[in-house]
Length: 390
Image (tube, rainbow, N blue to C red; front, top):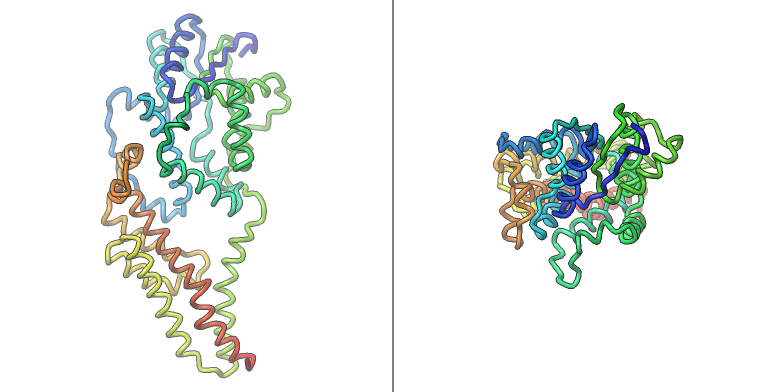
């Protein structure tokens, strides 16, 4: 690719004007290659949508829970909802400018280069980099965007988002609110997109990317020596910082076990304490699940496994109640699509994705209350006092 022959078009992903701008540029310039901000998975999905091909849209929530990807799935769903909602508000389907680019390329016989990083890789790297408080803050921000309601005075002019000054302000705000997410979603992807562009062998290229990435891509192309290796930007195993919260949560059940053993070897009768531990754990697991709107079977499973999951730091009662709930509530991709059109809590309550995730979270929350509040005060502190003669 020759730098001087590259045209970068910065688009708003839900803008009808962007669709026209992209198609006009391709028809006028007739480049050798059009590079688009899509990965292979999203490209295939867009192509099937364009062809009217309907797939089996069943989502394996069981697999999501088993692989401990509830957080990743929830983040993806909320981000998808947010973009779909904006697209619905302006009557433009998200990704329409990419569809326009694909249609123009097919019409002129121009090859397409896919230059974006796989979406799950991007989100997993973002989650790996975030600390507990940053994750909570980011999730709260997404939920506020989803359920905060519409304010006519705060309506956004989509085309104004492409203004460099407005983008700078928006990116700076995002950087302040969630620096790790900003680094991965924006800065890293700027580098990745620029690196993929440099790998294109043809000279004359048009690149269709989100307007927020254009300044960063331009900086990297002007200074290619600053680009990190692409394989480093695809690594999802590296995690940042020391996971103090996870360490502390893992130490709590270990402490419980230690107290039981100390009491046993001190000759204290722990039978009653064991019964209390089991009963309190099971009741809280059951209550958390049933109050989250689960089936009775899911609540029973959540209660039965709660004592074991409290002792085992790598297990969570909500996984089991959620897996059981997923047997009764089949989740389909249309459940994600419908999120953009929810207008009330009643609509949300009938969405199977929300209901299953609610059971997972509700069960885990109740068991966490038992672990951090009820069991220490009712079982372990009294037992600890007996051990040391308090």
